[in-house]
Length: 154
Length: 181
Image (cartoon, rainbow over the protein chains, first blue to last red):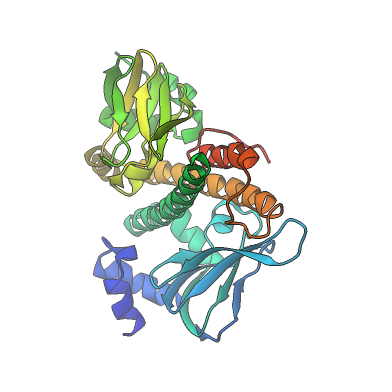
């Protein structure tokens, strides 16, 4: 499946019309990366938003004393990553690394800014996509925490 | 009840809307009066509406194994239902009025109407919600690192004394506790 077909079928961009998807396709850069490639390094500044097209990406964060990495999540096709630092302009909050060969489409930060802060219809749709991904991430964390708390009750 | 754009902007200053946008938003908001005990959201039930707290107080609880865990309260100027508003689906929390409360409801139809009348205002509202969600995730990541530093694996069950720490994180994810860092 090519990137155009992927964009038209992935639920992430449900609601986008053909013109909007074509614009996204022209704006995003698709590349293949080998196993172990680090897309985002925790603590660095943000330069792009990523859409995982194929493969798996592992999200980790440093332990406080600086030894080892703790796994936060495993991402799969259709998921966006690298959002938080682009939105709040803080440092990257986690490290994202390819687990096996992956195909990723990335949106440079200047294009992200135009889409996130603009006022047209596609920008409204883009806002919804970003907000939905953030809700998904928060709900995943809430689910994990409520399970942990329940385990402690018993 | 008549709410002026000025009064609304003062109460919901974090929404960062201009006067014209506020007037348009007010036109699509539906006031709902609740008495103590009335439920606004039920965990596991479908939710797609944002509720802005105009007056009174809401109580947020979640179910953990068969017991109810009280997470906190939402005062005037706060809101609930943002998850379902952005991605309609099952609510993750119970929300009930703790006292006589008035909320201003923004439904999906209301958002559609708002976006048709003023795309700028609808986008500004979504931007504010996204910024708030990103803030909660960042705060939680900071705490997550702190927690994981104390244990061999971050997802290992922490000792009973750490339960409060996990509940605090849950409260932050729900937007019930501010962290100024």
